[in-house]
Image (cartoon, rainbow, N blue to C red):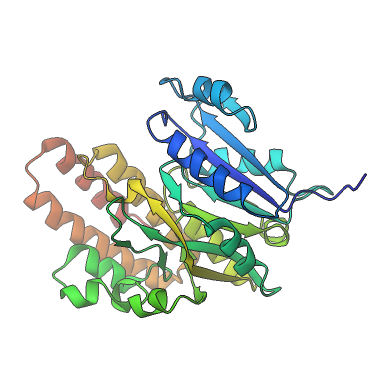
Amino acid sequence: MSTAGPDLVVVIVTWNSAGEIRAALNSVLADLASTALDWRVIVVDSASTDGTPELIRADYPQVDLVASAENLGFGRANNLGLTRAGFGTEKSPRAGYLLNPDTITHPGATQILFDALMSANDIGWAGARLEYGDGSFQHGAFRFPGLRQLWAEFFPTPGRWIEGPFNGRYPRALYDAGEPFDVDFTLGATMMLRGEMIRQTGMFDLQFFMYCEEIDWAWRANRAGWRVVCAPKAVVTHLGGQSTSKIRPQSVINLWTSRMQLYVKYYPKWKVVLASKLIAAGMARKVKAERDPELRSAYETVRYTAIGMR
């Protein structure tokens, strides 16, 4: 019997995902069944209270369920799934596919991503073209965050710059051309990762609990010489990308804490200083404009943290 792992292991992390996990699993399982790949699906549930693990146990016996008693966060839960899949052992799969529970896989997408990932030995990561639930285009690939993106976040910026390279976006023409193209990183909603890259770079850095985990990993992969590509013929609907729910104060703090950790980790000192000033000034503008006292307090917390960012 061969000791080699499967071609592909899909890892999905859930947290109170009962309302969306069926569509994610039904679509990716159907797509996997249409391939010639040797595959496996792992779901890591982070202490859901809405019946998510019970649903998976009852309706998806072909799925390997890992039910955690605590909310592990995105990075830690995915690391658990990748470890269970055998990455870092002699039975390491050829590739791991991190997929959000709020996604719907379009036919053929999984094979297209796998083929793109394996098309060159230096490609370590491939991501899909994302769409909103209404079928409209969603940016899913970006340049590493820089000072210009910070400016666009807080200060008046022409719309064409918001949608372009100034704000870290890649031209729509690259997506429309259909061929895989090199990017700095793709969103964590769809990340197909080569086993050799995982072995060399490690997994998610656990200092990032909820945000920026994929950016940090892509930066490490880039520094290790691995390429990241977007394969636009692989289409995945990302429902969560269009959320219009109310901004939560703690989410604001968590997001900007992770962003500032990222800047300190990868920026040279002079750039950290400029980023600190931009964030502090931008948050001061938000404090002045915000009426919600809890959000205003969150922006103020971020502003003070930015002032001390080193």
